[in-house]
Image (cartoon, rainbow over all chains, first blue to last red):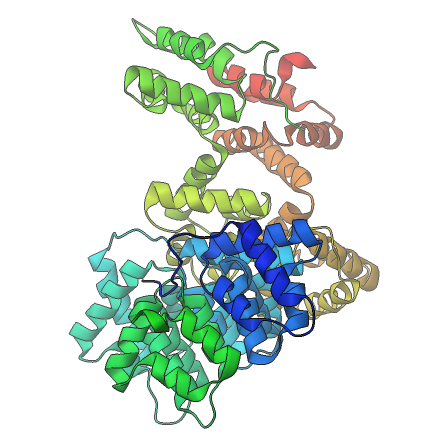
Amino acid sequence: MATLRVPQVVPSPVEDTQQLRKAFVGLGTNEKTIISILAHRNALQRHRIRETYHETYGEDLLVSLKKEISGDFERAVMLWTLDQAERDAVLANEAVQKWHPGNLVLVEIACARSAAELFATRKAYQARYKRSLEEDVAAHTKGDFRKLLVPLVSSYRYDGPEVNTKLAKLEAKMLHKAIAEKSYSHEEIIRILGTRSKAQLIATFNHYNDEFGNPINKDLKHEAKDEFLSSLRAVIRCLVCPQRYFEKVLRSAIEGLGTDESVLSRVITTRAEADLQEIKEAYAKRNSKALDAAIAKDTSGDYEAFLLELIGHNEN
Amino acid sequence: MATLRVPQVVPSPVEDTQQLRKAFVGLGTNEKTIISILAHRNALQRHRIRETYHETYGEDLLVSLKKEISGDFERAVMLWTLDQAERDAVLANEAVQKWHPGNLVLVEIACARSAAELFATRKAYQARYKRSLEEDVAAHTKGDFRKLLVPLVSSYRYDGPEVNTKLAKLEAKMLHKAIAEKSYSHEEIIRILGTRSKAQLIATFNHYNDEFGNPINKDLKHEAKDEFLSSLRAVIRCLVCPQRYFEKVLRSAIEGLGTDESVLSRVITTRAEADLQEIKEAYAKRNSKALDAAIAKDTSGDYEAFLLELIGHNEN
């Protein structure tokens, strides 16, 4: 469930646009207006505001915003204002440009979205960067990570509920054999994780657990830090239980020495209109404190205010 | 250019449907009516006929056709009557089910179509088979062929005209190095062929030729028959010059001991509404005889009549 709250009576795009413009002009910027409008409009409404703004003032709303605000607040507002596919394309491109083995953004975009959403992102990526997502991923990664990531971002998984039980048992065995041999980048692991439907994979992982006594992700844990294994576990969690995956990502971002604002902004802007409610509930359960309280403690100013509006702070 | 000829005044789908039904009922079938209608309607018109037929008679037109006609004629009419994406999905599924290293149908569908056409086929494949195309390809192929085919059928290439010349030179070198080392399934070969745009690849192959003195496909030839090398050459020809590729496929189908009707039907039904005119011209030039004369010589009956109508026999 989304945490985004849209007022019962929404001003027209023309009214919203005029209010935003008023917030920009003159000395200083009225950040409160920016927050009160943009943090309470859904994707379609934001899209119309951006169109209307462009038609009226001859400038992209994002360009105007960039001139007025800065830092973490700017980045969060920019990400949020984009369409979902465009936002994921921007995040994927950033991940590609500065790719390192610990970066899980490509895994998230490939596995924690629906097949149709991932395909929309591939289209948006081409429109924006004049290259395909998969060619950039292939060119900027190497070795086992490339073997894993290229099929993931190229996937268009079947999303029906049908499950082939015989196949699930067979592939659970194949996964177990490869993992037991510590052959973690085995082509059968890549093939199964990269092509099977989510329903089929859930059945396969259930058989794995029943047959071999451990959840697959436990067998993919190693005492030593291994970033390829971390990626495999992230793939599985994003495919099977994205809300718990995102809960953990938020927890790490908040818990660490200093808060990781780029992670906070990414998770909140990408999930506020999807399943942030479930992520909040998982967070409260796991950490015995509310996500909004934790964020309020670690952030400040307009950035704090914006994130709290997106996670539905005042509604609970 | 298409060879399909549609009459200037096209009967309504209701009229066409009634005529087809009349051709089916009673003793015997009027094959001439089937040919005169279906071989002269474009994809949208055939789609409407199929819809109207289903609404009127409660049966899929393809099912009715199957009861009335048989053999090569049946198969050609069935393939032709399907939408392009559905037809490619059926051909891809057949190729997957009876896959062997010499089968180039998956290469054709992945490389001789536009990115949007291939994606439409992936959607149609899921709707029809309740699995993704790439999971079936991955599950039914192995070794180097799997390494090559899975990324090809999963690709959604950028189709703009932009070319990065520096990159083309760099990747021509990478291709040459791998080929010189006879490392034909090298991951850089797979990556470049599997992800780059057609415009970029054409530039890369031109640099290859300029820099190393041979067209890349010449360097991919071997005295001994090697089906993986044949596949690589087919990938390159389908990406760069599909018409000359299809000319050769038709030539082999006609020249061999006995005609390969399944190849004839596939190439003619998939290209008649696309570029069969150019393929015909390439065939005439290369073989010093007209494609329709060659087909008329090697086929007979309703099958011959249907193919000749599709290739625009009476119009030249």
